[in-house]
Figure 1: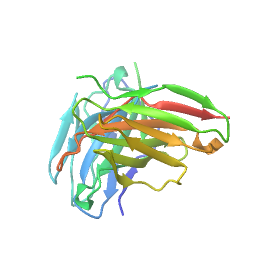
Figure 2 (figure 1 turned 90 degrees about the vertical axis):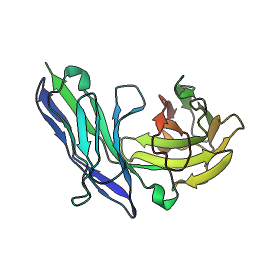
Figure 3 (figure 1 turned 180 degrees about the vertical axis):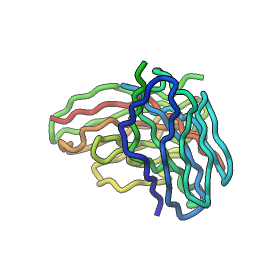
Figure 4 (figure 1 turned 30 degrees about the horizontal axis):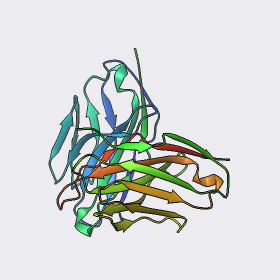
Length: 114
Length: 114
């Protein structure tokens, strides 16, 4: 079946530190992979995506590379800001099964301190 | 373009009652998906509607139902509410076309069952 395993949080970093949030997946077909971010009191916002192996998604300084050999999609950012404090969710969608639903990881709460 | 809107934003209901939540997708989007978010179970897929038909369904009891109207607006109904139904209910819209991967989320409806 489809599942996503995400690095347990919470993660606390100082401003300008390097961020890595690990994400691995299991899928029956050829999934598309996503990172979503949820700010307090809000819904989910799509941060970045990758639809095939070796694709790199990037947005707002965040990056993640679709690694089929390690079934991973780790999120990275070179220098975090206080405004990056949020909960980050890794997710997959396996359109090859004919379904459009997302499978989410458990989320990682990031707190960036000045 | 206006984003996904959900009403109401907050609801308090009593065990045994029923509730209806509403979602208006992004203009032009024909697919609406519903997710339940709880601290214990995380984000779980409820169902997806496309062109007024349920296209995909998660593993929830029959008390959870939905429908979609000709203008793509969707409603979700939960009957005979239980304490465990307390959650943030998120709606997501997408174009629904084959090969489309992005889902855009609304701010959610927070349901509290007492």
